[in-house]
Every structure is written in structure tokens, then in C-alpha cells.
Length: 627
Image (cartoon, rainbow, N blue to C red):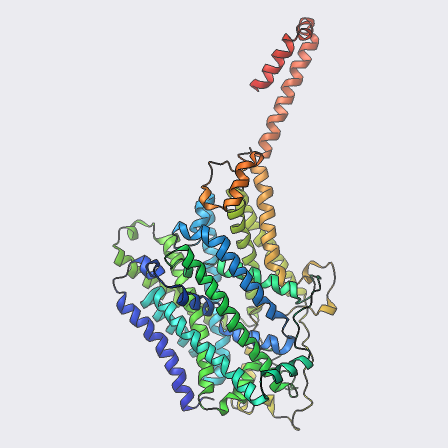
């Protein structure tokens, strides 16, 4: 174990406080109704909900992954945070005014109301549940590998501690426990990351000195305005990545939309997003700065390129830095480990709360045996659902720990599924003439095609090359991994485990200089959600054109954007058009009948005579009208 008594004390306080918050709200909410348990009675304040939203998104992998990204690849990905802020503002202005007044618990109730299709709604829910449980497993496993270095506890024990802790307080306290525990964990995360930034700044002579070192090491890059879609990162690609990340995470994902559903008005729901955008930009900024601090520290003796190091993964630099630097300051390692645990607990508890909402609202609520229960008894059932979801999440965490490099595939597939979901909601909100068949076909086909693209990328793209990393200033002979404390651990096993830890973005892609223009699989991973969104929308339009558009009476105008509805009302060509096949067959039948009538008139001279004075022509016209 690499933690002192002070470190263990601080770390234990962090865990106990999170559990205590859950127990407190659990005791207060013993008689809570389903609405109070899942949404806090729609009376919660925007600021704590915003903090919960931020830390529910920023996981331990974000702390390690983003810092490693800045260290090895530079700051271009930082632009993603600008895209996230813009995307959150779009959700606040465009989606919340439509979604919140519907008074939903499950976001996907909107899909059923808009398309009048329960099967489409449940299809989206099943997809979210499947991805959510796998995501919980992923949230638990990679940090547990890193924590093995600090605590000395086996990976399985770390998974169990994290999973059991957040399951207990999530089950007992409901959304209030999750939210207020998240507020505490946000403070722990900020303090833990700031420990790296402040200590590094003091040691290196200030942030300006760190920035100068990073600049001369070619780490500072923000304004690569190249329009090529085959680069790993550019200004436009990272901006797009952030925008679609925000739309998928805060616009069409139950785990985060449940936060603004818990407020008392549309205005308050919007303020949740405004506060969260500011909090996200700040938290990600100090995480990114931590990566530059670590680069300044290791600039002359990089641990990644050590000849004996098989862990060619930038995320491990965080572990190296904490073990080499923070362990020398009493309590600092404990604070950082507490931050890692806090990041895991906040993200997992958010998922558990949202999984429960989906299971209850979309499947169990209408079952007769449950519908006859009292409100308090329904609340008890939901607590049981959280416990069950926690057990399932733990099982996935343990299963994922045996899957090795499956992590990268898991993240890539998860990313491929966000685009089609965004496309489905955009079609629902902004294309009122699109029918259920078009939406369903667009959603399913876009998932299939997007998975095809992502699997192609996974199997064909080469890893990106790091920026220049130097070992010129390493002592001779070099100490193993430049971190003496790592020598006390089983390096052979932990190395194989850590190599699979990924960043918060997609896996590293082909180097910009090695890509092949025109190759579908060579496109930047930043655009994967874009393709899924566009494919879903295009297929939905085509299928609707074939199967027939909605009429004004087919949908409730409250379910779509006001400007889109006004356009729909004015554009009669879009309203209630019959299926294309039926239209073609009808016109063909009419044409054949008309030709038959004309042929008969030619063989009958009296018909020609009648036509000359207009009577026969009137008969033909009347016949066409009847048809």
C-alpha cells in the first residue's frame, strides 16, 4: 500500500460521508412516493442538480484519460469543451421547453407519445439499459486497476467497495441522496485534481512556466482549422465531437435529463444546464491543466517510453505522478484517491438512478400487480430495483475485468449508438411529417450502419503516434519506470491490465500523416455520432415518403418545435400524403381506365360526335373524377 495513515483517514472520510448522505436521505424518505424517490418531488434546486450533472459525466476515466491526452497529444482536444458548452445551451433552449412541460419521468415516454409506438419506445429503453449496465462495469473496472497501486487492494475488492457503496446510498436515498452526494464528491474531485495543479505549479515556478514548457514541447494547439475529416483532431472536429457529446449526454440520455426533470419549472430546468456548462468547463480545465503539469515534470524523463515499460498508455502518467510527487506530501495521495473514488461513485450512482427510472416507468409501472400497490409500497419496489441494478452492475464490472482489450470495442460501440438516438429525437422534434415507420427504420438502420463503420475503424486503423517524448534527462542507470514505489507491486500483472485503460474519447486513431483519403474507415472518430444522426434522419425521410406522411391530426403540436409545426401547417404537400406505392398504383389504374374509355369512344362514331359538341368530353371527365 502506498498510502500513509493520513491518506487512509482522508480517503475513508470521503467514502463514509458519501454513504452517510444516502442513509440520511433514506431515513427522511422512508415514506417517499415514486415521484419523490426518482425526481425529488420536482422541487429540487438547480445548482446541486447541475453539480450532480457535471460529476455524473466526469468519471475517473475522464480524470486519467484527459490528463493523459494533454500529456501525449497536446491541447487540441480541449476545444471539445467549447463544443460541450454550446451543445448544452442548445439543449436548454431547444429541447427543454418541449420535454419538461410533458411532466415525464422516463425521457423515452416522449418517443411513444410522438410516434404513437410503444414498441419503438421500449426498443430505445432496452438499448439504454443494455448500454447502461455495461457502462457501469466499465466505470468500475479501469479505476480499480489504478487504485490497486494506491491501496494495495485486489481489483475485485476495489470493484466491490465502489459498487456496494454507491448502490447502498442510491437505494436508500433516491435521487436526493445521489444529487447531494454528488455535490460533496464534486468538491472532493476538484480538491484532488487541484492538488496536482497547485503542487506542480509551486514546484515548477508557476503556471506560466508550465505553459511555456508545454509550448516548447509542441503541446499547445487550439487553432488547427484544417477541414480534412481524416485527421485525428482539429478545431472543427473537436468542436463537433463536443457538440454531439452534449446532445447525446444531456439531451437524449435518461441519466442526465432526469436531473432537469427534478426541478419545478422550465426556467429552473434551463438553469441546471447553464450552471452545469460552467461547471463542466471549469472541471475539465483543471483536469487538462493537470496533464500539462505532468508533462512539465516528466519532459526530460518520460515514463511511457521506458524500455521496460509495456504500458504504452498515457493514462498511467497520472499514477506515476501521484506516486512520485504527491506521496511526499502527507494527505495529498489520500485526497487524490478520494477524488478517483468520488468520480466513480458519482457516475455509477447516476446510472443506477436512471436505470431504476427506466425499469419502473417503461416496464413495471403498468403491470397489474404493481399498479395496485400504494404509493409508498411503489417507492419500496424502486429501492429494490436500485439494489438489483447495483448487483447487475457489479456483475458487469467483474465480467468486464476478464475481457481485456474489449474495453476499446465497448467504448467505440457505445459511441456508435449515440448518433442514431440523437437522429431519432431530432426527427421527432423538428420533422412533424415523419411517421413511426420512418423513425423506426431510420433508427435501426443507422445503428447497423454506424456499428459497421466503427468496427471497420477498430480493425483497420493504426494507433496514433504520440508527440515527442524524451528520456534524455533520465538518471543512468534509469530506475524502473522512473517510479520507485511501483517496484513494490506485481508489475507483470498490472501492466497487462493497465494497457487497456482508454481515454474519455474514442480509441487512438491512425496518425494524420498515415491516413488514406477517401477511405470510409479512415474518417476521424469525432464524426461517428454525426454519421449516425444523418443516416437516421435521411432513412426516416425516405421511408416516410414511401409509406406516407403524417397529417395535422396525427400528432400533438405540443410535441414538436413551434417553428417546425408552423412550416408543417403551411406546407400542404407534406400533410397526410398517401404511401408512394399506393399513389403509383392508383394513378396507374386511373390511366388504364382512361385509355380504355378513349379506345371505346374511337370505335363508337356516336361517341365521337358527342365529343365534338362537348358532351362526350364531359362524360370522360366525370368518369375520371369518379375514379
